Image (cartoon, rainbow, N blue to C red; front, side, top):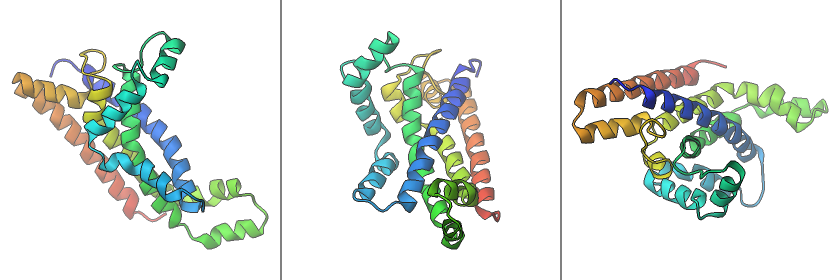
Length: 219
């Protein structure tokens, strides 16, 4: 493997996507764990749908939502002077949606596991909900939340179907490592495919070991 651009692009895209998924996902996880409102089940279903949707179907929906003929696509082109699809930004959007469910589901479970008596003690002391969240709930749930973020990163790094649908396969521009591995296999370049696959597998093992450590260590 002589061209390392797909690896650097994948790391950059997945890191950015993980930040986006963490910011949105932690908020959604807290809302789903603590909120009681109509439509809560529907919100959870929509947030976690990318887990069960085939990646190409997710990519199709993104392509129709962000394409040049869509309202979002036209607004983006007016603002930035170019289309959103078939750019690294589109790859970030696809990876963010792929990572989001892992942050939401793991984060929600961790938040729900926090002892409610600790939160009740701060309410009795007159603290507002946002302060209870920052002082008790999120710090106590941090290992579960971090595990979800780590899983989200791994999912973003390995995304193929949605990314290739919405960002394309443009060498030197939008070709991420999973897409490069596929291209290498199609071209009969076994050495490049093997190297890329080993890198992705190695990162996946590190992430899973991290998640296991976070899940088993006491808070």
